[in-house]
Image (tube, rainbow, N blue to C red; front, side, top):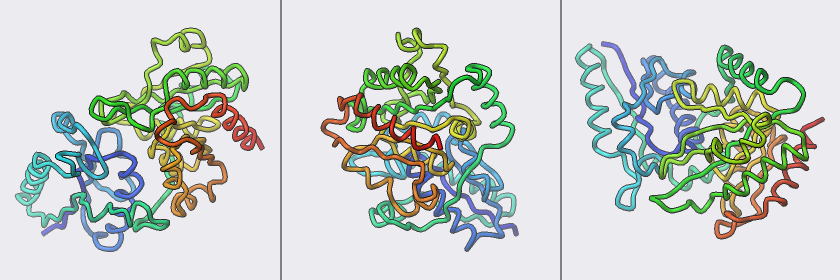
Length: 327
């Protein structure tokens, strides 16, 4: 009989996946399942996050992804609580039956609330094995060529993830206005003489993503200094890592997704609300970034006022940060 461990499916928030789920799973596998065949299940494009401990990666089928209306913590927010809906348990049971028929002894680890209590997600040193990531060399070269064939080598280049999210049709309390993002990008081009790569993550209601600038006057006016790179598809995480590695620094909206920049150990300037800024300063995060040597967390404004907080102040803080990473 062969031993098999299935981990997932991950249907919750991306920040929870990279911050707590994957590190916990990595540690559990090293300590308890090192002799097992490992199957990890998550969204398309996230294979890179699981490669170091997985033998097989399965993408959640599209028809199941489309049923996820409100990803929250480890699951889907339904009836006021976060759960793994029955349709996903049925999906796992079918996979288990398939491998059991092939004479495997199958264990599973499915995300659950005990793995994501406040004692863990607010811990300086939560359970888990945390590592830094680098993009696969072929994807890194493709993205590098894409960036520099577009801009050339005359100016420094930064990347921006202009985060946006709606919660069941309502603006999320951590959004920054599109008008402010456009002004900030324009200031970077005009006053810091920078080229800008915009990380394009299509926005799905309650799932979040990035602002679409393709039809804006900003893009039409400064298209020679703005490149929009879509990071959907099978190489999503690899492409994002490669963008982070091939730009001078990144700028993130108020999102736990900035943890990807921590995992890449690349310079980043990130907006955050006053209430949640401390959630980016834990010891485990600093261990990934040389004690946040090249990290600046701008958490001046609370949820009640961040949406329209002044762009000039944000830009000046970024300009100060940018000067520190020049040496």
